[in-house]
Length: 164
Length: 172
Image 1 (cartoon, rainbow over the protein chains, first blue to last red):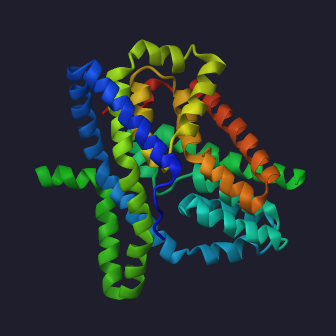
Image 2 (tube, each protein chain N blue to C red; image 1 turned 30 degrees about the vertical axis):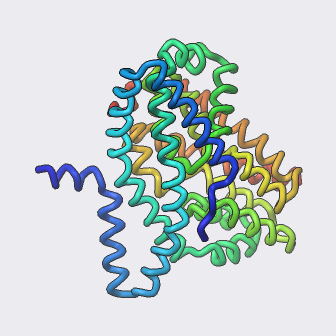
């Protein structure tokens, strides 16, 4: 499933390196202080991020994309939409897997409401990243952001179901 | 003492490691599958985190606090929101990559609303992702979902400015 660096990640690298060179030529001392500060910030996060990564692997093993697909296409009852949104919240399927999966469902005539709910929570709501978000921004921030994103995902799905 | 602190700091990792150990004993096949499922995300992290590190350094050393307050502060208005949306949209990588940069912006005087806009658009609004969505679900589907998501993100920014205080955010 490995993916090589796309053009966007590559330009992201290029811009950061250029900015970094500008920074170090403009103010070496300040940049070095900032490097130390960022290093300790990264060190604080890296363990949690590794935890998240291997947790995603576990979730994908027990809730594989095929299972999600079968469920998403099962019916358009409100309960299916809510469970689809929950599935999107706990899983982190990469975009290049999620869009073809949902696309083939919609082509086969499935309702788009659960599909949109799933796609939207997939990126906006993060249950596995919640502990890290809470650590960085506090419980109130993380809860409010994830809860609002969940509600909006359902709202967007319902509206799109009416429009399309 | 040090081990204690290390364990507290890496609760997720320890929990996950424990689950893996149990799974390896009970069902080694599933455990191997889970490891191989994780590789994609591991590669993604290795490709993106050095950039995030460089960007936080640049943001800290090169951009003065006044500029952040002017661009993203509580008086930056709609212009600040649009700037935040733009910053989040041009970036790459998963949402956790946005945490250090958002935190840095917050420390330098960005409003909570704009920080939540950066975080959300970082996760959702990506050119390669939008192109992929248009390819498999059609341009109309993609454009409508994008428009509604941006509206939702802006409303969230408003709610965050209204109901959350900077004091609610822990300092490093």
